Length: 230
Image (spheres, rainbow, N blue to C red):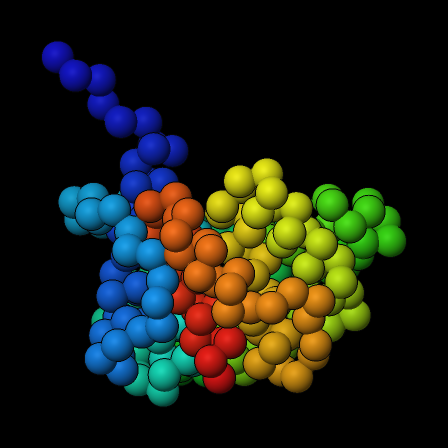
C-alpha cells in the first residue's frame, strides 16, 4: 500500500501546478513569449485545500500576466487568491510578510480588500553581507513586478551591484532557482531605468539552456524576459 503524500509535498506540488497555470496565462496572453525554458509536464490538478496553499505561496505572481501584458485577471482567479488569504492568514513575522503585503495590495486593487500585517524592516546587505542578502532578495523575487514598489524595491535600487554579484555567484554554483530569481530583480531594475553590472540577454539565454525543469523557475525567467524587453 503506497504511503500518502505528506502535506508539505502536496502543497509543493500544488504550488508548482499553480505556477504552471500562471505561466500558461502569461505566455498565452500575447500569443508568444520571449525564449525561456519549457518546464516539465505539470502535475495533476491538486485538491482544493492544497490549491489554496499553492496559490498562497505563489502570492503576487498570480497577477503577473495582468501586470505584464494588461490582460485582465479572471475574476475566479482573484476569488481563489482572496480565499487562500482567508484560509491561510499571514504568520505576521519573517521576510515573507513582504510577499503577503504585496498580495494584499493587488487584491485590494482588484476589489477584494484584505489586510496584511506590517512587515519587518527590509533586508539590507550592510547587516549580513551581500551573499546572504542576495539570497533573501531571491526569496522576495515575486515582488519584482510592474506597479509594485516599496522599501524592498528601494533596497534593490540602492544595491544593484550586490544583486549582480549574487546572480553571478548563483550561476557559478549552479543554483538555478536562486539565479533565476535574482536575474528577475536585475530585469526589474532594467525596466525601471537602473543600470545593472550584468548583460541580461546572454544571461537569460544561459539560464534558459540550464533550466531546472520547474514551472516556478520558468515563470521567474519568463517574467524577467518580459521585464527586460519592456
